[in-house]
Length: 476
Ligand code: NAP
Ligand code: G3H
Image 1 (tube, rainbow, N blue to C red):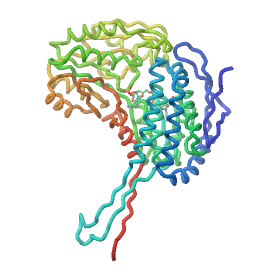
Image 2: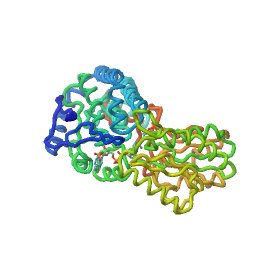
Image 3: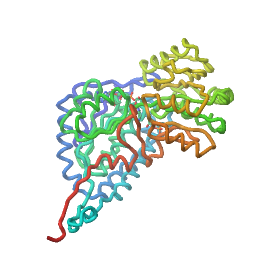
């Protein structure tokens, strides 16, 4: 029998009556089981977290930071062990999986440091009204309370840690709901917080299928803040359930790389390939379409296809560049987009091959805007080139997307790059680099259907705290 993983609740490890078996996407090997929590068990998680918050928020920032630094040290110590499990559970290359754990430890350390630097302010009433010159407002930031952190399958540890650490340092308590495929990894992250000795109830986990318990855990009145990363449909649904409660949504994307005539094409090609095919395209920030000036398109396609042909296709433990997708439904969806582009006459520069859920990298040229591949997020290793004739056309196609996560512009004309950046309806524009979330102190956000709210360590702390103003008359 494989290991039965347990939830961490109120300082104890707990099984539930029901369990969910977790299998490796690449091999089908059974990796273990996680509890499928009942609604009553969720009630207990939330009730104990609420009780724990009083003492936790009463601690000083320095005291809370010490716990976070300990958890980060444990993750660094165990990065390879946890990375090996993560690699199997989500079919992510082993080195990248270890990198995800280390990056999480770095975020936790940075959040601890950022928290101790958090400052309030004092406002003078006399700045607005001479008659109020004896009034001052002492403005501080307070924790929001209980934060529900929901992470996606592609970064089950990192996109959990990037929510948990800023929440905890600011005096909140947390319930983590990891993705079902990724929940063993989420529970290994919990082990680090448990070993760091966090007081009981401050950090807890909830496992179970989102489709079964998702609504219940979100709608629950105990939750004060919902911090979600995942797909746009689920994010929109959670947004409706959240009602008036504050929320952070980091959702899907259709990031464009815009390549101008004067661009360094070798640099662009290298970044496009790394950006589009890393973790087999299963990144919200993957380059999901290339908008290239027609005059240089042939040259760029040649350079990109040479690099794509060098990508290795295989198993996560061998650090292959392209590994099996997370499940059959995901692979079928990618195949559907590819078939649509084939039928509508796109040029298949590197052809589609599929074995089970393993899809070899696919490259299309001459994709047109009537094709699904121009607009939909594949979350797989397929990249469309769309040829354009002007900067305006590139901006127009980029902005027509329902998504607005990020975009890249490749050019050496920096004034023009900044002008384009101003017009792109996205959260972040990268100049001469691939789209990407990091570094993790930067703001990370999506416009339109790519999200609501801003993450990034300092921004996440701000989001999960609320302003409290105490007004005082210094003399009567
Ligand atoms: P997903 O299907 O939306 O699931 C995300 C998380 O939500 C999982 O933990 C899932 O649990 C949970 N969930 C599902 N239904 C729920 C409900 N009704 N209530 C509460 N939670 C629910 O997304 P995914 O397939 O894991 O991730 C891929 C998507 O995430 C892509 O669209 C990608 O672009 C996006 N993403 C965005 C960012 C960003 O920062 N913008 C980062 C990473 C990924 P179960 O696994 O149990 O269903
Ligand atoms: O999948 C979405 C992640 O936020 C992307 O992060 O750009 O560091 O891979 P990344």
